[in-house]
Each structure stands twice: as C-alpha cells, then as structure tokens.
Amino acid sequence: MIAQGIWAHDLGTRVVFPRTAPRFAPTIYILYARSHLTQVFSHSLSALSFLVLTQVQQHTSMALRSLVARKSLGLGFQSKAKILAVGSTAHSRGFQTFSLPDLPYDYGALEPAISGEIMQLHHQKHHQTYVTNYNKALEQLHDAIAKGDAAAVVKLQSAIKFNGGGHVNHSIFWKNLTPVGQGGGEPPHGSLGWAIDTNFGSMEALVQKINAEGAALQGSGWVWLALDKELKKLVVETTANQDPLVTKGPTLVPLLGIDVWEHAYYLQYKNVRPDYLKNIWKVINWKYASEVYEKESP
Figure (tube, rainbow, N blue to C red):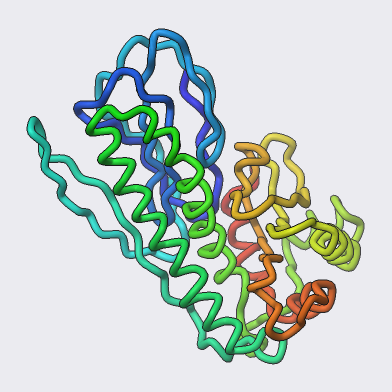
C-alpha cells in the first residue's frame, strides 16, 4: 500500500528507492524543499509503522526491489540542491543536500511590521541551522541505510522531521510575506476572496480566527490557512514545533503559514505575540496565496 503524497505548494516531490537496500529497515519519508520527497521502503517479516516527516502507513511487502518515481510538485524557493555522488561497493549512489534560499526582498523591506534585524537573524541563523542539520541528518541516514543499521535509521527520524520541516515551513513563510510597496497586506480578491467569505464569513473573521489560534498555541509552532482538497473548503490549522502542515492531513495545501516561534518576533515584540500577529497582516502576500489556491482548488 503506497502512502498518500505530501501537499505543500511548489514542493517538488519524487519517490526514490535505492538500488540496494536492507530488507528490514522501516518505512521512511524524507521531505525535501524544492525539492524531492524521497520515500525509502523496506520491510521486515512483521510490518513496522513510524511517523517520520509526515505519516507512515503499515506495509507488509516482503522486499524492496526497484527505483520508483512518483509525481512532482514544486516549492517556490528553488532551494538550489546539490547532488553529491556517494560510492558504494556495488553501486554508485547519490543523495541530495539543500541550501538556504534567497529572500525575494531585502531584510528591512518589511519594516515596521517586522524589523530588518529580526528578518536577518531569522533567515541567516535560524533557517540556515535547519538546513545545515537537515543535510547532516540526511547524510547520516544515507550511511545508516547503506550499512543496514535499522536502529540508526529509526533514531534519525525525529531529526529529519524537525529540521526538514523547519526548512519546508520557512521556505513557504518567506513567500507569504512581501513589502507594502509590492502589495503586502492587500486583501485577496477573486476566487480566494470569495472562498474566505464563504468559509469564514469575512476577511476580518478569518484574521480574528488565525490571530486567536496563533496566540493560544502553547510553546512554539505555526498557524496555517489551508485548502482541504478532500473537503473542498478552507480551514485554519495549527502545528507544533516545526511540523509541516501535512502532519494534520495529506489533503491539506498550505496557502498561508505564520511562524509563531519566539525567534520570529521577540526582538521587536518581546513576549507579546498578539501584537506580532496583528501587525504581520500588513505584509502578508495574498497574491501568492491566491496563486496557490487557483492552482490547487478542485
């Protein structure tokens, strides 16, 4: 049974099986930004199930046999991935690493809603750390699979989910923002504006709902406006830590994601998260959200 794919707009996905792989490793989902979603399937005599980056379903196949490619989606930042050739005794194999995407605006372009200092630290330090640690975990995973080390494969799952999710979420977040002079804060029109009115009553009601759920989220995480492709409606969801939206359901497409980790606002707003949530709407890129909605709506 093949698990459903991950929805993240502009998130490229490809399912890849190594030519040689241990027959006992658990199912692994590796989420790449721009990128590829690589699934490595292998099985033991009894099915194992894990949550790695998205969701894991039980499998009962006897052995992993071939390279399979599935559909591609595209992530908007074109995260300049490098292919690193890694030799093995039997085959020459490769794995993919990722680099920090450039912002489509200057660090200070979102002021006064978000300070240039916050944007620079958020992008250069926090996002870069997720990318660095994601690459490290992927390299370790590659080695563990090559060695048939099932325990190491399982141990790496949390690092892949956290750092891979951090890379994916932030890559979406940067595109959800744009300077006021480039349309930041201008409300959506057309089909997305109509859908917001239909599902929430008004734009004002939607903003109030997102702000309330974002402010109430305990600890760190994200608040999302999403399209549920199965229910054919807009929904508001929250995710903890760096969990990507797909962890709430494989049919959810993120239209808008707001980072409510303290590193996103503390230098400017201190511990007053509601003020940050109130002001970020001045630089929200509804044009981007509308493009995603037009592309993904049934």
